[in-house]
Amino acid sequence: MIGRLKGILLEKQPPHILLDVQGVGYELDAPMSTFYKLPTLGEMVTLHTHMVVREDAQLLYAFAEKRERELFRELIRLNGVGPKLALALMSGLEVDELIRAVQAQDTSALVRVPGVGKKTAERLLIELRDRFKAWETLPGSFKPLASGAAAAAPASHSADAVSALISLGYKPQEASRAIASVEEDGLSSEELIRRALKGIV
Image (cartoon, rainbow, N blue to C red; front, side, top):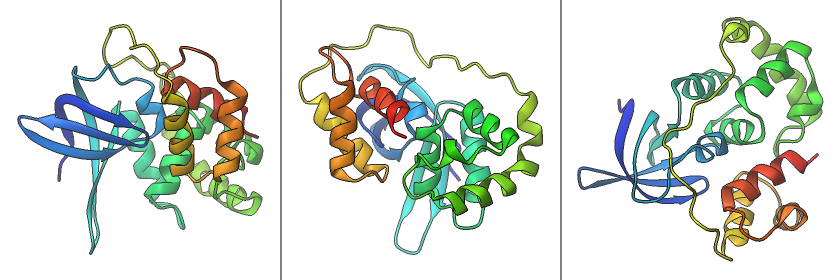
């Protein structure tokens, strides 16, 4: 199993990452919580990974911190939660937000995520309640992966942000409306996605 990769960040198009590890390009999928912490292209980054082997594919999922990877592993153990839904949950909610929702058994936080209805949210919260006992005492702050100013946002970032939301399961019209409602000059695609996800109810 591949548990960690350290290499040069070549591409980042949510939810996909391309990482050059000593000349080998690894394709990875990551939640937005990880994208928010990525350095600029061409910089070195270390990512914690989880490998999923299927009959038709071998997939790698990347996370900025071990804590995020452990949450992903907890989620995919749940009945009816695959990697795609787990990434969507982690993109729509920070780890601590999800923990608070579980503690309060708050379905409204989960139903914002595409593919999660009220009944599914209720079931997930019940199943997660016991699993999350160990998470409640963990510190809530995240540290950035690398320092450095973000690059200026090109005009294509709006389209990239819309594509990312569609990849997370939102309908094209819903994704376009969400990005249009938060669009400002100079924002990166990651910041547009972060603001849009916060505004989607």
